Amino acid sequence: MIGFITGRKKFSELTEPEILALAISSEEDDAAIYRSFAARLRAEYPATAAVFDAMAEEEDSHRASLIELFKRRFDGPIPLIRREHVAGYYWRRPVWLVENLDLDSIRAEAARMERDAAEFYERAAKRASDPDTRRLLGDLAAAERKHERRAEELEQAHLSGDVRDEEELVAHRRFVLTWVQPGLAGLMDGSVSTLAPIFATAFATQDTWTTFQVGLAASVGAGISMGFTEAASDDGVISGRGSPVKRGIAAGVMTAVGGLGHALPYLIPDFRLATAIALAVVFVELWAIAWIQNRYMQTPIGRAVFQVVLGGAMVLAAGILIGET
Figure 1 (spheres, rainbow, N blue to C red):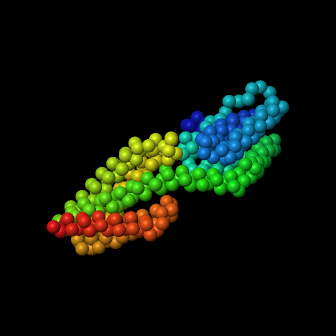
Figure 2: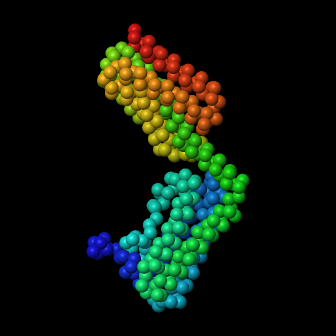
Figure 3: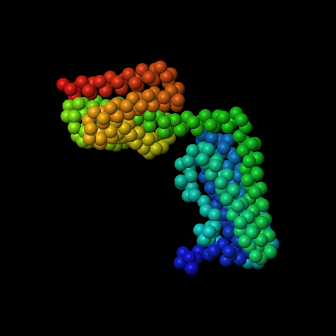
């Protein structure tokens, strides 16, 4: 019934020629995916790109072998059938989603692709009642397992210890430039720049709801402004800082988070309790920023503490003094 509604066949309903044709088209798809990985990675990770180029060639070779097998066993043209025509067949993520993953995730995706294919054919072989079909599925599973082992061999051949370390360093640098640096800038801006207006309002009015509204407006407004500024400042092509959209999201979200951290306590009606919690949150935020600077930006901890904690304390003190005058 489901197959009738969706227009797709169940895998169990496929004939042997259709199973083989489906395997042929799947090999073609996987080769195209690996080539897209290689093109995406070639500029920054040439060794990993070479692995994916070789894996695409392996898929082409396997596809050619399956075509020859089809010609030997069956008469007529190869049926036009692809994975989207079959209900319950193993699926592939759209390439545009995978291309945005980091280096380790792309490698893991490739390993998953090979593993999924082998496991699917193995499960299908166990359920098949026809001996010839079971043998065909078993052969396809064995071929996919060889792909897995071949992929591991290619990684060992192209990604020696030094080469892998170099690519990991490049990947870490890209992660820092794309996510950590703009996110850290946003967190610092949101945490420090909103201290004065929030605490000035708090001590001037001693009204927790008004303080929260000011903090919410300051945090969200700063987040929007910081996000657009970061995204528009650099397209990342020449600087190598990565996608402006990703950097804008990182900066904008972390700016808003930085301000909301000490604005949310003012949802508590008790002014003294809300202020005490907000001050504690500020303390944690400033030390967290100093730790991130030391951890990812290699800023000496002493300098990070001086720049962030002392600077934040001065802004906080200015806000309190202004609010009390």
